[in-house]
Length: 193
Image: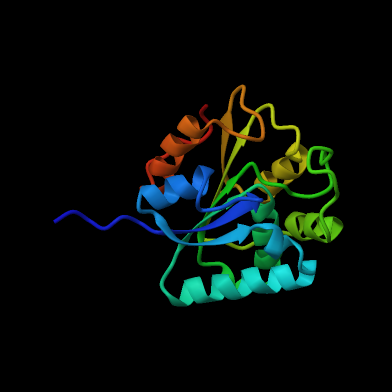
């Protein structure tokens, strides 16, 4: 009998869904435990309420025995906000994909996310707690705040970085799927491309 697949909680990027893209891949591979979809209904509520909803889902997931989280783009932003404010959620193994981290280079999103300065301060202060944290990002991603990632890495040497040469904010599905299969199985070579 084969070992059951590791399950993950997935927090989509803006307008993401489990019916397309990465969400559909996670579902079809049998990795998906649940998801927080940043659809129009979710993003239309107050930002503080969004954080409360994410926090409650993380608490429920922790209580269900969940340990792995994948957060994409703006989903990573929400996740980090919650982890900085609730230290009891530090048990997770986290993969951030093309994470939005604040106000740098956000012309592509069309707005600066709420509480961007607070998140920057919290990240620089080391308030984001986790069991393990991996970040995968395209080398040509114009949304990512590379300076802040550098500071995060300097403050926490345990953060694993993986740069995808020639990729932008939308990392190619083939590349990302291969990477996620390895990450879920803890078989990733970091610092490579």
